[in-house]
Image (cartoon, rainbow, N blue to C red):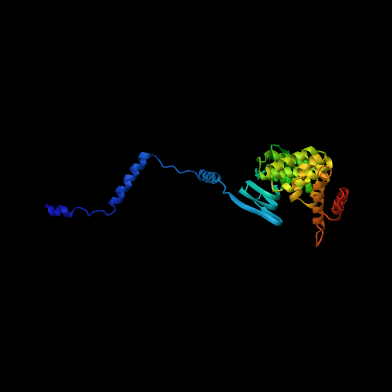
Length: 340
């Protein structure tokens, strides 16, 4: 058989041969690695749940503003807020913080849900888990009271404890001197006892910067309160301290201290306060100074009285304080032998 006949007997090429060769190669590789195993469906589901569980819940924040009437906010299924005032809230559905600025906030937290809520002010921190409570911030400070459950209160000033409904309200005092002055004014407006007002003023003076404007205002207010008590020497010491600061209310403070000293301690103590008012004060200041100078400087006393009378009776209308002081000046002038 010649070569041509041999070539004619060879079968043609198989077009599927490369695929069969690649399949055998993969099978050989699989046998070397061992059998491939698949995770059970239950394990795949558990892994997916775990991945979701470890993702943190996104935080959010909202402003709380209700000045014309009470506002409400359902923060989550666990927390409802009712408020009249201003503040803000931030956190997650079960872990949130309310930064409260002014007014009254009422929080209702579903118990036994692991929900954590904190109310923060400059004066206090109130922490609660599962309760109904209210926080009010005003000129008196931050007052907390509980309707149901229990809260932990930590005052910036140092007091800390837990409150239940039977405990009633607890107030954390302001911490800044200016706010303590505001507390004192609010107590005065409410007719609180002098000692309670003085407690706020004393605390403010302890914290006020030396020589500051707020220190002067605290001293002036303390002078007024002490003047209504028997603590006259302390009141006059506050007047001296204020005048040493050079505050803008020097005339007012001198007048109050001078009149107080004259009524309680006599002319000798009153003169240092009344003397500077002879030129810048009111007519009644000059009349009081003249009465103290009648025996020692009658000529000057007469001039002061005449000047006060001229000012009190000047047209078109007599100025305050009116007829009572006019009569007093005329009487003093007559006693000096002068003509009213």
